[in-house]
Length: 115
Length: 113
Image (tube, rainbow over all chains, first blue to last red; front, side, top):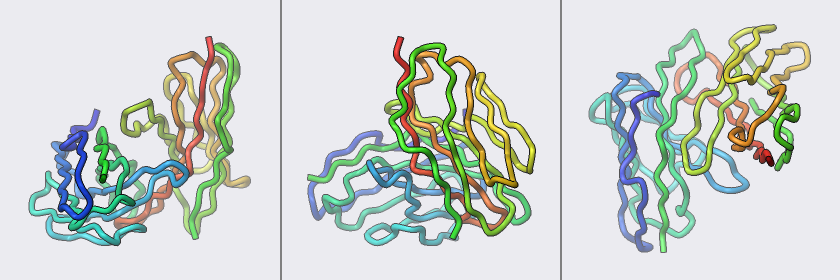
């Protein structure tokens, strides 16, 4: 199994509070991704990173920010949590490049509830 | 745009039945294709993959063949077990940096003893 951990695994927070989720990898993979999974919507990409300090937006980036100061860590921050951000969040990693397609490996997920 | 379509679930089978989950794709380039499985309360796990036309991916009794002419990558298993109950995701990946992975909506499989 790919070495990917997410913390916390479960969190309940109140509307308007900031929340940070952490993804940590031990595989030294270049690419890291944050997805959210919701019933009826499948997996949707929030943000991704293609290197330290290099990040870009995904399909559903509004209300989220990310940071990657080290290869192994990718943080997802909800600046002011809303109930619509209640979801299960997955981190993924990939060793992708420009000429080949690489599979992604997923972490165990963080279940976030915003009340 | 690039997309993946899967058969709607849930799919309910009896143990030892034959499984097929259909997957078709639309892609502007030449994708690699994947099947992922998600067990309850867990993340997605890579089940199998194929990177070029006519390749067959296989793992744990599951198989899928990359059919470029029909843009399909159907998942099959000859005899399912209760432990195969999970959600199955078809996905494609295109060469290029970053945002190049597209997932299907997932198909929930329930296998009854």
